[in-house]
Image (cartoon, rainbow, N blue to C red; front, side, top):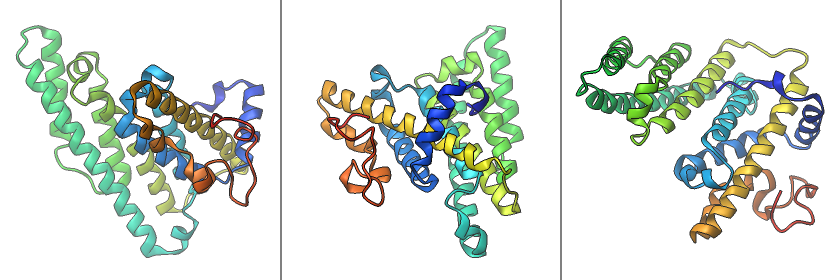
Length: 266
């Protein structure tokens, strides 16, 4: 899902920007990645406790926006070899997600090809078309991102989505979107394109959105862990990238006001 910043109410926008100013974008980027990794493993357990797939999709989009803005990559801009490694890693991740998505589509085709209705037959044709057109994984970040978008579009088809609902479809859609955003971000850095003069406030807003989402994920994980008898679940969503090992202090020792005076809730 794309990150639509324009729909945020002005008052809430100011609050998110103010919250985002208190954290470096490098920290929020790292925490977003940690939370998304936790969601990839345990996401299904959080939905009944307030953190849904749509929330993870928004977090993935926010993470991708920071990557696209070059957060955490200043060294890579001046270090060609390091940048090349980062580019190669992003492409490799994208190709792995592509392979998994194609496997999920293959399963959908197997199920749908058994039906005689035209709706299912049309879905099979869409699957065949995208599988043939993207039969070879591209090693160019921008072009690979397009391949991921095309796979996601077919997986999002109602008939295909129904066939893959319990066969990895929802996760594949979310991962395809996140990796496509990351690929476009690394492609921008490789060509040296930079942001606008308003980028600082925009990054603060994105930081604020990430803070809101990772805190929500942590709260859901804590509640789910208690309800399911899995106390270790909360560890996968701990805010360690924001507060370090202490769990309640920012870099430099400052206590975040949303953490201070609580019992671990934010």
